[in-house]
Image (cartoon, rainbow over all chains, first blue to last red; front, side, top):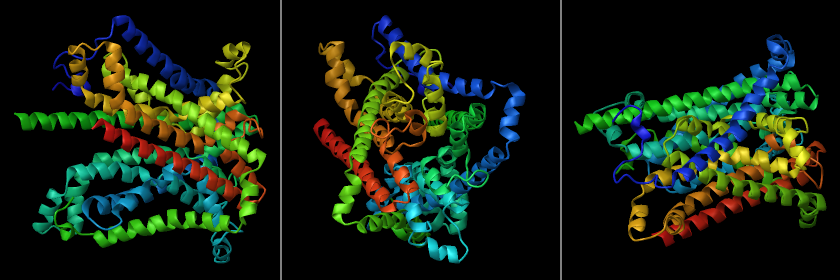
Length: 295
Length: 273
């Protein structure tokens, strides 16, 4: 298989593209138009607006505003922490679900999807009900000196909740399809759990894991609704980058708002590029192993 | 699945950890939510949930999400078809861009679209003279929900279309079916379950979406106020129980839609096989 040929059309029977040329051109044109208008132009517009006052204005908006600076710092702390928690959780959940049979296994899989079905605003509300000053646990935690709502622990909780399924959902089908023969063999040859994880399981799932982490991280950075509710939106304290975008927008500070938005967009584009390269790499690896087994 | 399940180590610890996290993070908050709602009498619950203003938000959230999901089915089918079936310049680039709405923070989407659609924005300068008000309108809500839900349909339909490989179509064509007949009789039934899944995912996402909508909708009660916004508004008045009641209605709506589609999907699978 040639390197770029991972997704070329299967030529057996020369099928498929038997629509007349005009229709094909029309459909492809429509696809370009949709993506262009819905995705490309908006992305370009973010940067056009962000740099409307030139490079100096951009730097001023982004770096010389202490509240904006703090929001960048906060987002870049909370998001990786949430990703770390969800990576550990995803590994544990996938290991439990794909490697063992036990009653309630299906229920567990269903529970994993619940965060996708709940509005982020409702997620925030639930944490306020638990940990807020009028909440069930809030007052006693407050007596112990722990502040969750309107503070960073609340941000972390909300972000972790919303991004909970990403790593697990990526790993479960992958580990299911890999099967456990290799792992069982390693154990019967005397591998310790530690060796088993680092030498067998992790190398097998590493790209799926990276893929899940990338998606989880992108979502964690952009989370808005849940964080909006639990943060109290205190400038310079609990405002994350997306919240800062909203606040500057409300203050009619468009250049400032777009400057923060441009940074978020840049992160999204880096995420996409990373995903794209990872997919190509995995496809090439698969093609290579297929070639090896065929010859 | 392991034949002899307990050969592998770590069952107790990984199950224990998973359950602890799920209980603390997921079950406990859900229970708190139900507890809070239970502090209301049925009459109070109805009073919170069934006000004119609240009903207007459900209608809007439901309607805008449904319209946006429907548009996403059409656009998603087009994109999946083009990306799978044709080889053309820039195909990989387009394919990669489809995921952008997943990666881009929704606040950015809301900000950009509201700026594009106002009277002197890039899109608004052409649309507003035609009487198409994108910003601060229901149309604007639909537009951002289309953007936010766009990848769902494409990414559920794409693998199915890839796996079809055209054999059934060829057979249909050889047996004398026209292209149009093949489309409706062969392709569409095969794609239908994935289209419905895509619709449901996009719809459920739209129901709960907050970040992008508040930028563009203007949040006017009875006009452009969505249900999640009303929850936040109630919270800001410290009306926690009322907020919770509305939240439960919203959750019920999205869980019901997901369950309905699950059921439809299973049914159409049974017919297909």
